[in-house]
Image (cartoon, rainbow, N blue to C red; front, side, top):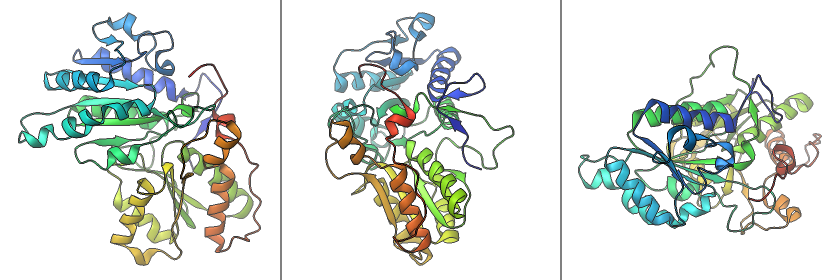
Length: 364
């Protein structure tokens, strides 16, 4: 079975937003060294509801707004981490984290190495990726590959409430490494149902997660495309008997190589679906792993799916073409499983992810 989730709110389900809020709240309550800093963390919206009310509960010295100075504020977070605090720095758009690349790449990632392991920089940088309603070229990027390329940084892309909880609780508790987390803005309203029993495979803070077993095609996906892959898998199983194995990459910097290679060895067919551009990115890295370690497992060329190789357009009709769709993902899986583009399998109706996962709710 795949990951259980629904779009609408329910008292029996846990939303992505609630999982984030609980991890922030519990970390602050459990550990006095934890601080939360970022533009808007203390206002009434609270980073899409993930920090709402925390400044009132824990005080302005532990949950506080910062000026529009991303590079400088990341330097403050670095100093706080070196001084014994655990900073959680938030960026309401991941694009703003690009202004802090010097601190993250030249300082945070290398501090422990340059000083022979005497210093650690335990911190969590939360960033928001993904489309919504026409954010345009400078507010819609997904630069996870840029940061995953750098040794010393851990990069995660939680796709569900359970991966938020497992990852944030463990990494904040261990206080070992700097982590950059990419949260997809369309996931905040999604509600997930916890399994009645423990999952067959444990959720680890790093690595990858097997979300669905299958025999015909392996899909390695990131972030919201994990949910899209599960929707496509359910449709193809129901309409064509195609069984898709879905791997949630989860940690772009530390993929579970054995899980991915084992799955490809069983299915012989691989699709990589990433929320960013395919060239020189996460999709390319997964292809490299397979080609270097077990290329003979492939019975067909690898298919990669991502954003169109261009800046993101602002108009919604063009934005819908820019991002991968459920229809395209289903079509690519069917073509790979059947070995032909003329597979004759009924495809799901075209739908914008912004219409399925989140309705327009106001500015930004």
